[in-house]
Length: 130
Image (cartoon, one colour):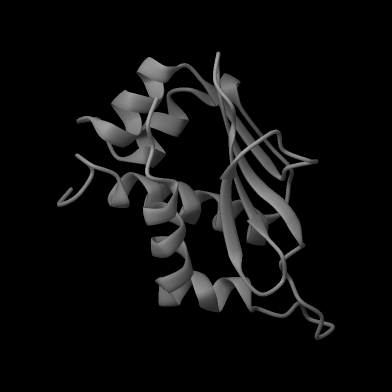
């Protein structure tokens, strides 16, 4: 399956709201965003898509994730339907499919993972203009 990861990475890097969230500090004044793999979309029979935050920049790559905050497992058909085809908004699709999503309990990182996926849906072919 061909996915334009560079286009998605570019959208993530240039979204002002997302950049503000990534730079947010916790109540003690430390960075609220953990470094490392924050989102892993596991595609059955294919290499996962991983979004990583290194403290200064978002990186998107196809590789195995290392202790990701959020993992969503799906097959190619589901990925195509959600991100490349016509489907309900992403949050509706997630609510209909909770058994395939594992996410640690942290509001800040959960909001970031959802933002990543919404921006993916909006930036992919077929998802524009929704």
